[in-house]
Structure formats: structure tokens, C-alpha cells
Amino acid sequence: MSSVSSLPVPASTRSVRDRVTPEEWEVRVKLAAAYRIAALKRWTDHIYTHFSARVPGPDEHFLINAFGLLFDEITASNLVKVDIDGTIVDDPTGLGINNAGYVIHSAIHAARPDLQAVLHTHTRDGVAVSAQKNGLLLISQHSLGFSGRVAYHGYEGIAQDLGERERLVADLGDKSVMILRNHGLLTAGISVEHAFKQLHNLEYACNIQIAAQASGNAELIFPPQEVVKKVEEQAKVFQDGNGPGVARHWNALIRELDRQGTAYKE
Image 1: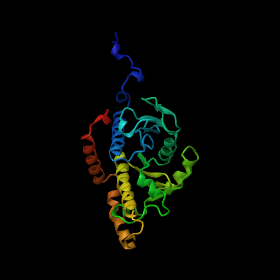
Image 2: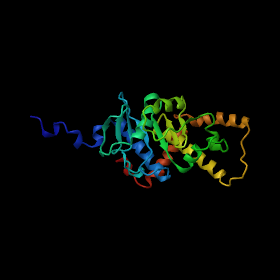
Image 3: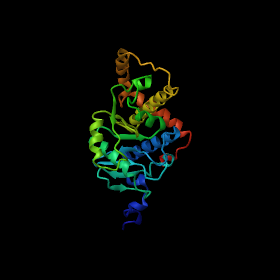
């Protein structure tokens, strides 16, 4: 005779960890950590902006934050799973998702299977740089690392129009770093860790640019073209998502985060 414990447990009564694969759970923990680290660094815009990650496996599903939660409230279990067409597959909170986040993130996940994670911010300095005609200036070691690697997408209003996805993807091309004009920053990567390292460097490059421009009358120094090309070559080793620098950077961030608590892993 079968015992009661052998009967299927309804999904609604099973924990998220119990109803997803180990591979998905690992991505959930990393994405939740990315949200929490961004909160520590004050890269948030209250309940707005989004980080997403592709769910491992054959289905075109990705994870994104529930609409209404602060970045420092995100956990591995409360992330929402959605498919490329916008159908919610699993929403533990019942809050749903922000449609603007869906438009931007689904566009990249659908068109770029090589990119596993997409991170988007509305930070003060990031938006400030996005509003400058010349965009990111090659005036610092941090910005030089992005030479020739930044795509730009013109502002079309709040991202509610599904038609914008085609134009966004066309502007991104084969790059993984984008400045959304009058809007903010976006980085992607072959992993959450890779996308976050790119975002960390891009955010800092924008911080430096705004600080350098703060006096309003100081003439900026632009390195000569031969130096720009040299740094482009030197930076390639750091741009490889599989390189040891990505793991080293991420592991240090996790140590910093874990000193604040580990609730994001739940």
C-alpha cells in the first residue's frame, strides 16, 4: 500500500527550491545576490529597474524581480519565472512583473542566447552620462576598457511598446554593453557574474566622468589614440566571461554581501 508521502505534492504547497532543478536554483541564488549587492552599492531606483537571468534548460524562460519588491528584499525564492512571450510561469509572490522590464529583458533573451544575464540600472551618474551627446568619454582607465564595446539606443519613452524590442536588439548588435539614451545603463554576460562585473566597471566609469565634469570649466585630458588601442587590447583578457577575473571579482562581492546576511539564498 502506498504511503501518503508518496503522493504528488501540489506545486502551491512545495517550496520553490523543491520544484525547480538544482541548476535553476543556483542561478536564482546568484541573481538574488546581484540584486542585494546592487542595493548595497545604492544602484537602485526604488522598486524600478530589473536584473534578469535565463533559466537553464530547453524552455525559453527567464527570472526577473516581482514588481513591488525592493532590491534588498529579493531572494532566490521570490523571483518570478516568465517565458519569452510574457506568460508568467511561476510567481511565488503573486505581484506580477513590470511590463517595461519584460519588454527590455525579453528582447535580449530572445535574440541573444549567448547572453545568460541582463542587468539594467537607473543610477544618477549612469542616467547623466546617457543624457550626454557624446556618451561615455574615454577619460579614465575604467572607461577605456569599454572602448569600441558600447552600444547606444535612443529613448522612445517608457518601454511599453513591444515593437521597440526589434530596435533595441538591432542597436545592441553583437555587443553586451549598452547605454540607453536619457534612461540608464545595461550590461549583459554569459553569466550573472560576468554581467555584474561589466556593470560594476561601467557604473564606476560613469561616476568618474560626472566627477571630472563637476567643475564645469576644467579641460579634460583624452589619452592619445595609440594608448586607447593599447588599453583595448589589454582589456580583452578582463572581458572574457570565462576568465579568472570574473570569479575573483564575484567571490569578493559575495564575501562582502554575506557579512550583511544570507537571506538572499532562501
